[in-house]
Structures are given as structure tokens and as C-alpha cells.
Amino acid sequence: PDITAPGLNILAAWSESSPPTKLPSDRRRVKYNIISGTSMSCPHVAAVAALLKAMHPQWSSAAVRSAIMTT
Image (cartoon, rainbow, N blue to C red; front, side):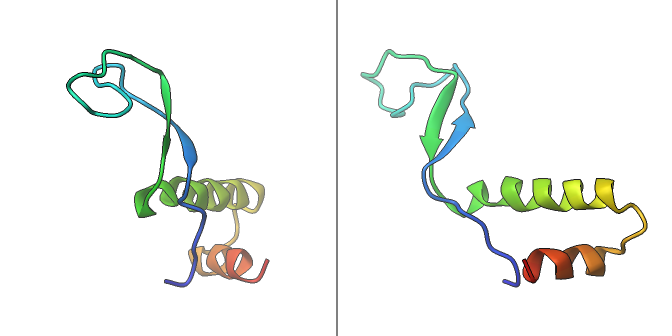
């Protein structure tokens, strides 16, 4: 990939319908959980791209990509 972001130990919203460990014996319910994985990096990159596009609406998607890759 051209752009990567952190995907390890991300504090994320968590559905209260399942326990944080996903074990049947775990009766706890939490609003947030620490999650890791490649899907957790996507929100970081999307947010940076959205902020750049908001600050520079005239920029093309290639310009936004270039700005992220070179900083």
C-alpha cells in the first residue's frame, strides 16, 4: 500500500451487546475496547484525508494522497 497507519491497540467504540473478550463467561459490557488489526488503520487515514480535503477543497484526490505520503 502507498499509505499506512497505526492499527495496533486502537481505542475504539464497542457494541455493548457483546463482552470485550467475546467469551461466553464474560458478563461485562463496555462502551470502548482496545482493538488491533488492519481494519483499525483505515479510520486514521480516512480522517486525515477528510481534514486535508476540508482545508483544501480545490485539491484533487491525487494531491491529497501525495500530501499524506510526503509528510
